[in-house]
Image (cartoon, rainbow, N blue to C red; front, side):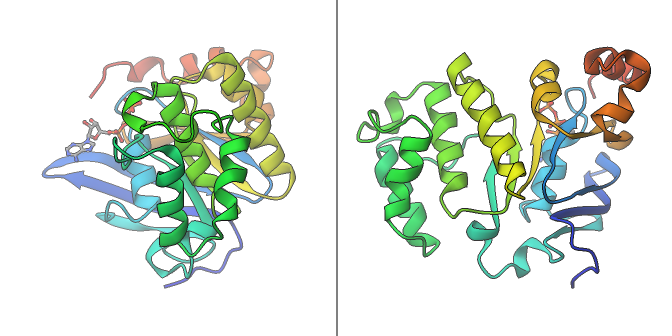
Length: 244
Ligand SMILES: Nc1ncnc2c1ncn2[C@@H]1O[C@H](COP(=O)(O)OP(=O)(O)OP(=O)(O)O)[C@@H](O)[C@H]1O
């Protein structure tokens, strides 16, 4: 099944229930090429579940998720189309970053030379041969980002990628995402760091209780709030603070 748009990502009426509990009720949005889109919402809003549906890791109860006009499972080379950072899992603790990346490259048919490139890009070259079990949260996060960039994808889906990053890492991530979008790539990034989203994102999708509360450019969304994303967000989500 394909759709008829050229959006990088399109969520159409996504719904996900666990038993009789609806984690995502109804979520639709677009991520165009050349834009960084922040996915915002309170704890338990449904952000991770939405991202998991986009990436074929959770089957929607209703609706469809499209990546480059196709469902994730229909992509010819997923790692070359879309890079992902989700929940920092999937790393074998006894492997080094270099081994982890070499295996990921081999599994996706990516040139081994990319391994040293992404290690350098992520500031991980010096730690590359140490076992992952000794890495800090920030180092694991840098490695996850390096893995996402391995296949030189045109789309990034990142769940809380700034988690654990030091100020230098946060600045690297910000510059990386801006440059990625400037070169025509599309980014969907979830974060609770609104000041960071304010700096890095072009657009935002705010969800709460599994539904989209607002979506649009940051400029439009915050027009009545002097451009202040936090004030806009807190006002918008004021009635949704009870964590589900
Ligand atoms: N596998 C699962 N089984 C049952 N409930 C789940 C499952 N995955 C998520 N949920 C529930 O769905 C809701 C949405 O969770 P989700 O992780 O998508 O929220 P989130 O917006 O990413 O939250 P946070 O900001 O806290 O990371 C939560 O109430 C969560 O407990």
